[in-house]
Each structure stands twice: as C-alpha cells, then as structure tokens.
Length: 151
Image (cartoon, rainbow, N blue to C red):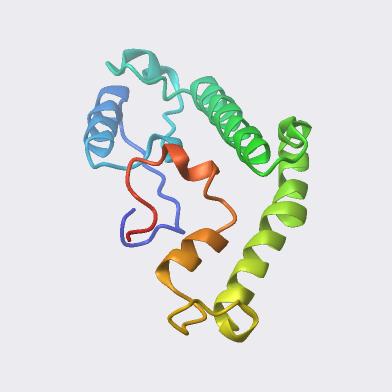
C-alpha cells in the first residue's frame, strides 16, 4: 500500500480463518481504515472494534462526510459566509470554488506581487507580520494545535 497507493490489492485465501489472519496483519500495518474492507462470512469472526464489513465501511464514510461538512460549516462561519453551504457535498464543493479558492488565489497573488502591498515603515512591502495579516483563513485556524505564523 505505502509504495503503490493508487493500486488496489485483493486477497483470496483457502479459508475464512486464513483470510482473517491476513486481515489482522494488514490492519496492524498502519493503513487508514477507510481503505480496508473484509467481505464474506468471516467478517463476523474478526475481533476488532472497527466494523470492516460492507455496511461498516458505508457507515464510516457517512460519518466522515458529516465530520467534513461540519468543518465546512465552521469555515463558512469564519469567513462570514452562508453556513448553508455545508448541507451537502455538492454545496460544499461550490463553496470551495466560489469562496475558498478565490480568497486563496487573491492571497497568493498579493504574495507574488509585493509592489501592490503597502510598504511598511522599514520599507519592506511584505513582512512576516503582513503575511499573517493578509492570510484569509486565520479565524478558521484559531483552534489549530500549533502556531500558524511565528513572529
């Protein structure tokens, strides 16, 4: 998995016990659980807290979708935009294109063209403080575990 992340692997074994043993070893390899599914009757014999069955994977993805839409809602709130953009994945994609990407492109443009930024008293157009002030997503990252900008 780690070397060929874009490829899929199918394991077939002569018994459910053999397949479960292989599956236990794969789970221990630090592969994100969203990439693992155990099909067949042997899934009931797995001794894991996580449900690796077909329905378990569907429920995992639905839960992940809700978590991500909550983050979209928080981002919309931090940008003073309509929070209803977080109701569906489709509206979240629209929010990304219309509100997030446009702010990000504007920020990158300001960084590349320091002449358009007002010079500081020291004569520098772009300083580390100015970079932090121009960053459009500071409010969203207020709860980040580390400091975004030093200085």
